Each structure stands twice: as structure tokens, then as C-alpha cells.
Length: 264
Length: 325
Image 1 (tube, rainbow over the protein chains, first blue to last red):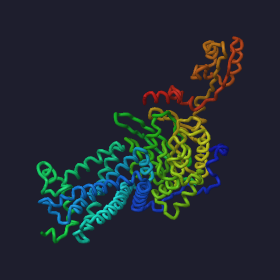
Image 2 (image 1 turned 90 degrees about the vertical axis):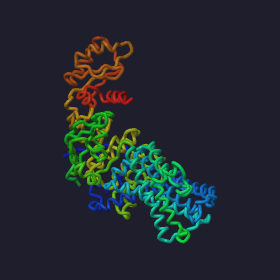
Image 3 (image 1 turned 135 degrees about the horizontal axis):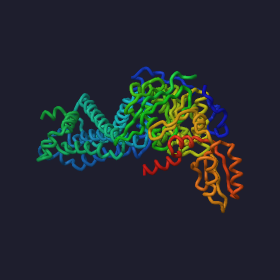
Image 4 (image 1 turned 120 degrees about the vertical axis):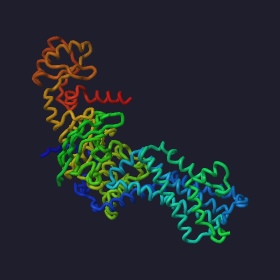
């Protein structure tokens, strides 16, 4: 039997309330300890709650992800609106809708990248260790970050859509096309999150930020962002032709395109 | 309630890049309900051992079972059974104390209906009810440590890992934390694996102590057993103005072998124990040597460390610091 000091520290224990309930008694705690899916989802929702809570209660985290897409949208759609009139620009719903697709997909991709920044910060400041220690199912941590990235982007996408409609964006596609457009953006968001999460979890430092951001930035901007592919020339046309982001944009444009005008 | 399993490790090794063996073949066994003190200087391998036992790091070789579960093959079950408060409290400065506890409960799958009550119970337990709704960015070091302990207890673990839980705390906070850890083991039957570089912490809290140096356990036993291995006390004489340390050393060496003392004093480990003290006083008096202080020290864990490694724990700290610099 192990002997233990009794009353030895009583004089100094002003903080620890001994009258508090002592239900800490060692016993198994997890009511769903046996169910792997229960553990997975409880971890995922907990991680997602924390990220979204921090993002939406901290303006310095929330505003950049919100302002940049709006800035890009207003700058490009407004400043380059005459592109609509140049020969060869064949997007039937106008330049605002053309730009909207790009900015929507860009915000989705960077929403994922910003989540990667958060993961790197969690590793650098030690909070990730708490998650790794507490989570019985660690795959739930990644799922939680992905859910948070999607939730964060959903708010950005909603505001972006409202602004775009307010400035007169023409929507030509049907309901299914629009759902497909937002589903596509969600997939881009997930891809961005997984890419940035992988880098963040591998390098575990916020200094990895450029590695997360730069490839996504280059991939998006070497696509036909300002004008359709047919209007690009030279090396940029060659690069854009093989860039997978071009296919994503073209799929997105189909979501907003009026079938009737497209047929023309 | 005592649980059936504690901690068992056999030949646990962790090698880092460059071939550094931070933990080099550790065997240990911690009985259920026991407080096990893992004592050693910075860089000795304490935290690496804890990281392996808590499934944060895979071992390079060797095996370990925590709460009866293999740390490599049954990581999720290990994490369900343990709580851990590691060296730096891993807290989110944007969350409040209460939010941290709710989050921790959620991570452990505690039903939503129970989370509020459990959080409140733990906040009361660690004396943070008044600060519960403040962001932890504004907490003091002691408050963060107490919150960290509460978080480690959220899911009622059967085994608790505390990695240097009192480093950087003031004396009062440290004593309070010691009291709570002792109570957890005594009343709740929690097995505690406590790493520390403070001798008095291991001495005061631990039922058994393992001393680790350069990745090896160099001594293990109850504090009393370890001190009994050293057996003999030391006496330290501090010369008064005018007396030379050399003259004192010459006399003291007749009574035992020299050992590390303070900067001003001369110390020897007594050959025949306390009974030598009278002879020392007579010898010093007959030579007309005046002393500022004469102190008898019972063997400490630092003496054990010195005997097992050839250097004192404090000296080892400085040495490690120099290596790291």
C-alpha cells in the first residue's frame, strides 16, 4: 500500500476548492467510447466550433477573408467592365458574372488556405498538441478544420453573392446549375483546406504560409481570370490551356451562363 | 476506485534526427494509484518519454502500455484513459476558461447536457469561477496552470501526466498545485506520472521516483529508499572572516570525503554519520578556527543524483543550458 502525505499542503491550498464536488473520481468518461464515428464527429464539431468562434469574434481574423474577395470583385468587375465590349468576349451574362465566378472560386480556395494558416498557428503555439492529446480519433481534427473552412467560406460566399446581385449580376443558369456552381466552389474550398493542412501539419510553423499560398495564387492567376481563354495569347494561353484551374472556371461559368444566349 | 492498470514500458527508445537518442532504453512500471516522480535535468529525456507515453510521439523502438493499452497500436484508447498537462499550457488566448472546458468536454465526447455542469464543477475545483468568462490571454501563469490541470481532468482520466507542472510558478501556486495532485491520487485513485526538475517536488509528492539522465533511468525507488542508498549526511562549514577554507578543508577531510558545497563553504560526506559532528567541532575549536556557520545536511535526492551521475542536478542544468546555447 502506498503511503501518501496527509494534510501536508492544506495551508497553501487557497485556490483549490476542496468543498467543490469531487466527481473527478477515476472512471471511464466517454459514453460513446466504443463508437468510432461518435468520437470522430464529436472531435470534428468541437474543432470546427473553436475555429469559427475565433474567426467570427476576432475582426482581424474575419475581415481579411471577407474584404479581399469583395475588393477583387469590385476592382475587377468595376474597373474592367468594358472588357464586356471587346470582340471575342463571348460570355453571355456580362463581365460582372464572368468575374463573380473567378472571385467565388478564389475566395473558396483562399478560405482553405487561411484555415491552413490557423492550423500552422495552432502547432506553433502548442494548441494543436491539446487537440492531438484530447482527440481519440485524430482524423476528426482535420475534418473539423475542413468544416470550419467551409463554414467560414459560406459566409463570405453569401455576402459576395448579395453584393454581386446588388450591382446587377445577371444569372442565366437554372437552379441545378447554381447549386453545381456552389458545390464546385465547396470542392475547391476543401481542396485548398487539405492542401494547406498538409503543409501546415508537415512544417508546423506559420512561416510555411507562403508555401501554402503561393501555389494556389499562381494556379488561379495563370488561368483565364480576366478574359476567356480564347482571348489570351502567347505563353499565357499555353499555360492557361493546361492549368486545371481553367477547367474549374469554365465549369463555374457554365453555372451562370444563360442557356439561350450560350447557344448563340 | 483503483484501476487495474498503470503504466508499463520496456526498452523504450526515441531517436531524433542526427542520431540523438533522447530516450535510450527506458524500462519502468507505475502501479495504479501511484504518484511516480520522473526527475532529471533539462534535456534528460523526461518530456520525450511523456510524449511517447501520451501518444504524441511514436517510439523508435520498445513497447509501452498505458492503462493496459499499447501506445502504438491502441492510441485512441490510451488517449481516452489519460489526461495530460504538458510543459507549456496549450491554451487558446482567444477563448475564455469556460469555453476551454466546454471545448475539452466536447473533444472527449461528453454529452452537451453534461458539459456545462462538468465545466462549472472543474472551475470551482481549481478556483477559477471568477475568471471563468475572461479570455485566457489575460490569465497569470498560475491561473493558466490551474486551467490546464482542470482541462486534463475534464473526462475523468484514470492516469494523469503532468510534465513539469510547476515550472515558473511562485511558491504559493506551486504548493497549491502539489496539494491538488496529492488529493487526486489519494481520494480519486488517479495514477500520476509527474516529471519535474525540482527535487523538493519529487520528494514531497512522489511515492516512487525515477531519476533520468541522458535518456537512461539511473536510479529508481521511493525517496526514502534512494536517500538510504546514499546513507550518510554531509556537513558544511562556512568560514568566518579571517579563517581560510583550506584550513577547514584539511580538518573536515579527516571525517569524510569532500563533496559539493556552497561557494563559500567546505562540505564533506561524513564517514560515520552524525556521530562525527562532535569530533569536527572539537577539531575546529582546537585549531582556533572561527566559523560563520556549520550545517548538517541529511541526504537529498540531489545527493542521489550526484552519486548516480557524478554531478549535481543543478550542475547538470547548467551543463545542459550550455550545450543548448
